[in-house]
Image 1: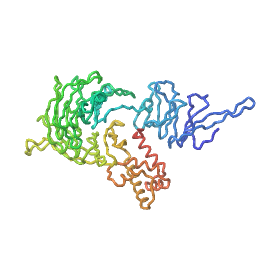
Image 2 (image 1 turned 180 degrees about the vertical axis):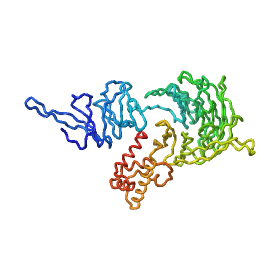
Image 3 (image 1 turned 180 degrees about the horizontal axis):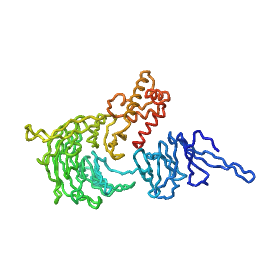
Image 4 (image 1 turned 120 degrees about the vertical axis):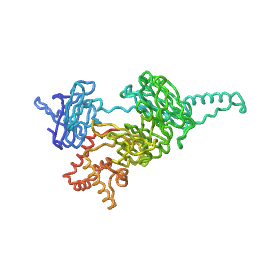
Length: 566
C-alpha cells in the first residue's frame, strides 16, 4: 500500500502483463508516478511486498490517462506507452524516457494496431495519427556554399532546386585558376629575379552563384546535381513549371549587379530542361533582357517576370522551348519588382521600397493593364496569399498586416473611356488585422491545420525567430484577458513596481497599434505572474478561479495545435 498526494486516475502495467512488478499511475493533478514492488521481508515461508515510488513526473495540469500504444514496425500492443493530460507524452519502451508529442492527443482514443496508428475524437472532428509522425525526427542539414536566395520544390520527386548567391566571392573555377597562377608565381620566384616575375591576372572578388538540386526523402538529404555559374553572375530568381511533357526550370541572372541601386550591366534568363527526375539538367537557351530579373512566377501556362520596373509575360514555344515575349507593362512600380503574387485574374507585384501594385491580364487585348499602384503598406519584405480573398504582408516597419484584397468590377459601359484604360475597376482594400512583431520578417508561408478553416501563417525573421498567426474561435475571451493583462501592467507601472513580463511582448503590446490580433507571447506570461496578480485578473474577468483561465488558454493552444517544437 502506498499513500499518494492526489487521487489516482489511471494505472498501467509497464509491459501489459499483470505479473510485472512495476506500473505507472496517472493522478488527477497531472502527476505521473512510476511504482515498483519490492520484497521487504520473509516470515514463515511467506514474502511481504511493498509499493515504492521511484520516479515522479509532472506532465500536465489535468488528469493523466494511460494506455498501451503500438510502435511503428512493432506489432506488439504493449511495447509503447502513451500518457495523455493537457499535453501528450509517449515512450517506445519500458526502459525509455517520455518525450512530448508535437501534436496533442485528445482523451477519447482508439488504438489501431493493424495500421500502427491512433484515432482520436475532438468535438466534431476525427483525427488519425501515425506513430511515425508523432515521434521527433532529427533535423536535416543541407550544407551550402553560398547564401540561399530562392528555391522551388518538385513534390512528385522530392527535389528542391536552390539558387545560391554571394557577393565579394570567388567561384570554384576562379579559385582553381588563382591557385594555379600562385603556384606558377612561386615556382618562377625561385628560378628568376624579381624583375622578371610573371604578373598576376587581376580578378577582383564579385558575385559567385550556383544552382543546386537536393533530393529530400524522409530524413535523408542527398545532393543530386550542382551547376555553377560564371564569375560575376548573380542568380536572382527561378521558376519551375511543366510545359507539356517537358519539365522546365528558368533562372534569372545579372552581371555586375549592384545591391544599392538594383541595376546591372547585363541580364539574362537561362532555360533548362530537367531530366531523369532531377539527376540531370540540360541547358536549352539564353534569353537576354535589359534589367535585373528579381522575380518570376508561373501564370496560366506562361511565366511572369519582373524586370526592373517592368512586368513581362513570356510564353514557351512548344517545339523549340524558346521564351517568347507575349506582352509587357512598363513602370508598374516606382523602384523595382521584387515579388509577384497571382490571384485569379489579378496580379499583385511588390516594390522593394513602395507598396503593392495591382495589374490584370486582358486576354482579348493580349495586354497587361495597371489598375492601382503603391498601395499601403509600403516596403513589403514578405507576403503570402490566404484563402478567402485575403493576404498577409510584412513590412520593414516590423509589422504584419492582414488585408482583404480588392476585387475586380466591370466598368460602366454607358460611359466613355480612353482606349488605354482597363475594362475593370478595383475595389478598395480592407484592413482586417495588424500586429507589431518587432523584427523584420524575411519569409511567410501558409498551411491548413484543418480543412474548411482559415489558413495558418508561419513566418521567420532576420534574427532567426519563428512565429505563427492562427485563427481563433474564442476571440472574445482572448481579447478580454488581453485587456485585463494590459490594465494590470499599467496599474503596476503606476506604482513603480516590476511585472515579470517578457520585455518585447509587453512593449509591443502596450505601445504599438494592434487590430483583431492578440499577442500569444503576452498571454503566456499569465502563467508566470504571482498568484496575487493572477487573482486580480481572475476577479476582473469574473471567473471562479485561476484554473479556469489556465485551462482555457491551454485548450486554445491545444486545439489550434500550436505547441510546435522548433
